[in-house]
Image (tube, rainbow, N blue to C red; front, side, top):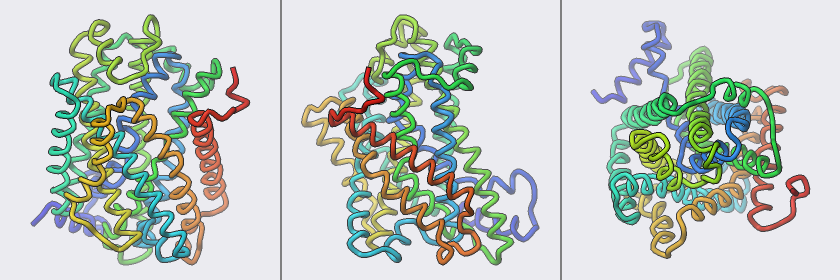
Length: 428
């Protein structure tokens, strides 16, 4: 019997009251852990390093706010899949006008490729630095490893959940080690977490980058698909229990992701803020860490980056497959999907484009694509003909609307800055 079959039987036993306890509840853990990788991908590394190096611990509160918004939207995505048995892309295909569906699919596919560009490059940069190899070789190794991991998806949902969970554990352990090595001023860190403060316009710019890239388009699509039909639900009591388990998992998994992001900022603040505040790139951070904190700290940093890049690239490919299948009802072989999503990364490097600039461009593309899944998600979870009694009440609906306005407004600021448009409240 496969691990997926065992998990299904175990979850059925929990819902029927035959199994109890923490180990039984752990069977329901998986979808949010996979989605949480989107919040620990290499695209977050540069922003968090820049925040810590430039402003010390003062922007930790921004990471906290970003994480709370992420929890809300991932919980809504999971709710959609559990209640309807359909994912966001499938519901969009079935309920929205055909021209709009085609536009949503095209934008979402571009976003999936942009996501994979950042994730794939991050893993490749880590391998290249750790093993002292050319970047293109690091990309080749990353491609082989990610495809090898994707093969496990054929065995059902459980092996992939366990693999990604192990990767999350590696990333978390790496940053725990970093915090033990780095000379952290915990009092200042606590003040930065609890006291909103934006010292200047440049700090606001970084805060915009942290929050504006919080909710990832592919994570919203993916989470609804990971929860659909994962558990056999016999009645409304089962559905309510599964929703309760899901909400708990989202809070815990996203809290871990938030702590990792805070650890990134804290590490950069303790290592770089006094004397190296100009550090803003992954490669620079690695080379600067070695003389400051030792080769062990630099090596652990790269291990976390590699685990982040490989796992998030795997998850990005899974999301791209789900998006295509949901919108078009068409599935391609996983090797072809992997080839399509990683092709832009190889093209960028072979064309001689700076890797950091490519990461910035990918975030701009994600900012353009983000309204599509966010607005679609709020639309569907608010409809009683889709969600029944599980449609959002006024309080959650307004919270979701406010979160959407905040994230989309900050993404607009990012786009305005990228294209050189004036933003009055960011003026020096």
